[in-house]
Length: 405
Image (cartoon, rainbow, N blue to C red):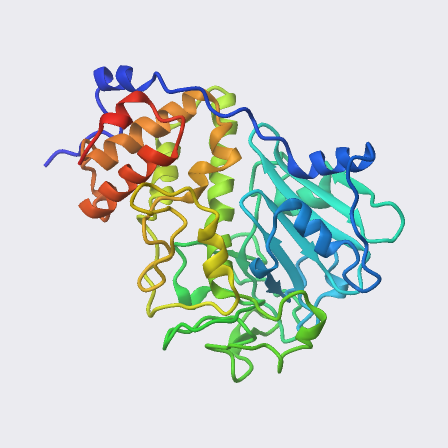
């Protein structure tokens, strides 16, 4: 059988291109908060403890503490304060990530704006008036990308020694400190340098010190009691953190979101530079549709309230279905299309790029594109995704409203 094209025929394309205008670009939420504070229209509450502005900052940015992830690899610019006994906290929502390091008077913030790429900030965690600083140089760019688009957000399994010091990975190419991870990474290769709470049956991961590395990059067994942990109290003093959890579901969600954000911003950059290559479009769609997702070896369950709070924010169709609904038995989400289709990064893509994505996605969901790469999507999955989008995404082209499968 010949391979069907990724894009549907030109006649149908002409029918699809009359998409309604996207929402007005959503501003950088950190810059917006900074402006309100400077104008005296808002204020941040400082707690006279180690957290300082952290709790109120998360509340202002709409970030739930149950999203907390804990990384103890010394891979931050504050690495001298980070280690297995004092991991770095990272909290997130769809738009913002906030980092907290014990013993530091600096809170780290990141957001992704579709027009500007990544924006990195610090906030002086000091009782004086809060001061935000935006970084536009190599301070953050040396790891996250000097042009603000690549490599962008980083979630990685970092080979580390027992004290969290990163170890270079042996390679035929240039030495590296990261193995980037996302939804396609086998479970067993994830989370060296991270703490992880939650259950996952007989499946094993590298978190919680399960694996350590010697100076020559060789892997060897690490600590005992590292899998299916419900508590980290025997690893470090969890009482000094906003949450005692490093929820496995939150971590897997952020893994997906990080690369999805990178790919959306990369697509926007390519479109603005004059081209959105077909290969890049196809890779983006494959990731959005989870077609290469590594299957779960066993069901997964978290320990915080993230599994409940994350889907609660979702737009739902008439049947109560949402793209943020978790599966957690064999895969991450029940309906395999990225919830980041509702994000500011997606909505603010150049119109031509959004049209190409919608056109190609429509072809896949309705069966016009029968290419093997998307064959993993069942008819039921495609039908559910199509119906959810029809009632929850306001800028769909007119053809979508009439489509059925």
